[in-house]
Image (cartoon, rainbow, N blue to C red; front, side, top):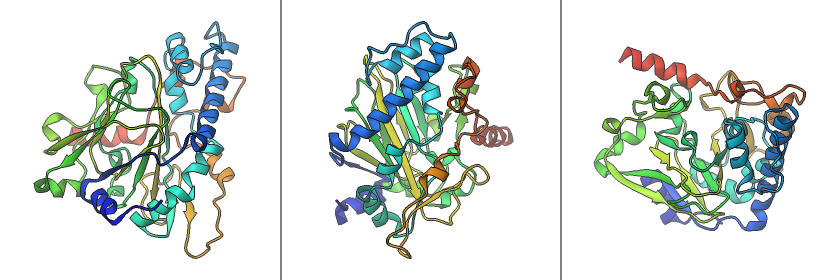
Length: 322
């Protein structure tokens, strides 16, 4: 269902918009099934390599990965960095329901951005709590000039107990902040936790209302790539699963040049066009990481859960210059 004129205005004004109940349980079930398969593959790899002593097969979608994480710290990170796009994810990413909304925002020529994410916010896991940041800070400089809308889709109800998204609705006097990248720091330089995340220091955050986005399963949060946002801690006993999917106009800078290119999803030049998912998805977009699931005979080690990306060098250099 397309956005109303009021919704479209609100999205452009605020940099975000919550759309409740966009997807049904039936539409989301293939995603859940694909995630269950990924978790099962990981469990069997760890078990075969002797890193865990049981498969936790009795646990389901909401708890199994959390049990694996306790038995093998870093299991949740491996799910996040798995890299190869499941078919069910591709189908919802390029679904008419989402592309009709994206077309209203960026026009009829639509490409999928190389960065998509499966997020497993396991309970009481500091590495699942994401600090204030802008998405564009994780990409190459200059890509902030490309408009890149994102859909964040929770696969369970997201609330203040299991971890919400929070965004900053900027004061009207701070409108210029929507057009620039704020200073970011590397979280692993704070000494508080060894993470791969960037964060915006409190003194660098723009003035504005912090909005907590409690959302039902099947709702989506539309974001632009410059709105500051974060993900709060999971204090529950279940995993708060979500995915985020991004788009942009084809031919514009994506910030992942030389690593992975966008995939054309829709074009007015050919109304029958369908993306070649098999070829595009076969290449992981993760940088400096082996796709550990691609070699089923190699045991997984804790170092495989170490994340490194080009944003680390970018912000390390910038902060040294400052």
